[in-house]
Image (cartoon, rainbow, N blue to C red; front, side, top):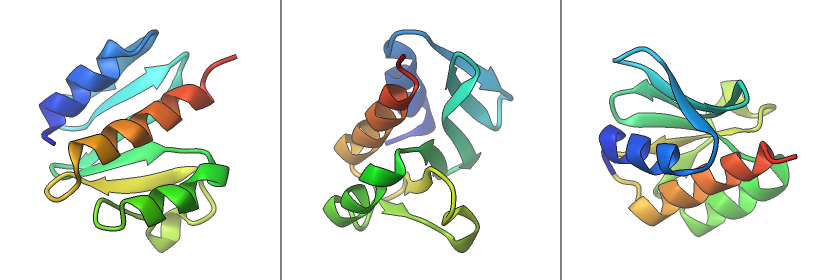
Length: 100
């Protein structure tokens, strides 16, 4: 999945707005992070802790949690090898977290 595809998908969800910069775009719902392009092929996605482990187990080649993110509601998606479905699933989880 490319960063442009990530952006198109994220922005297709209700109330998601793009922020950030050209090189590091980010997508938010009501000023709460959904996803942010950390590097050209690494997307940080905010996911519920209660669902993070199952996401990692379902898509082990697509996601990782570096030590600096272990205590945060986040995963890294490796866009150069992640399946599009895996990335969309993570973005959906992030978007659901922002719903009232």
